[in-house]
Length: 169
Ligand code: NI
Image (tube, rainbow, N blue to C red; front, side):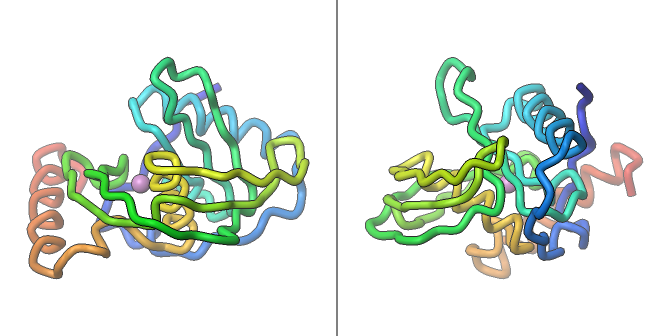
């Protein structure tokens, strides 16, 4: 397994629309394992393939306290949503930025598990937020897109400064 490099805002590759997965083969299993390892290594609770520059509809999540309940969703699709839940969201692609976002607090999502078996998940609160946040990534959307342009610009300036200090840009 290996730790993958995570793209960071304002990288334009985070804006690509991911394609549906057709083949659940061994290279996909390796990608899933690498994404899980990368998520656990960085202390994240979710990671979308888009964030590691793979533009396929795949995400991994673990919102458990013990970090022992990995969830993998292939070609996820929200089939119903209702309610409201507010959470101070962060993102591995938007370092050191946390903002309150309101999303539907109850969703039903369908997709495939890592073996290609159809699954349907009913999610509330944090898990609901996390799944929606990761599906947004697959559609080229970031949580900061829900903020005002002024707030987003402030975050952009801060991250670009960090990247300059790190010699990344
Ligand atoms: Ni994210």
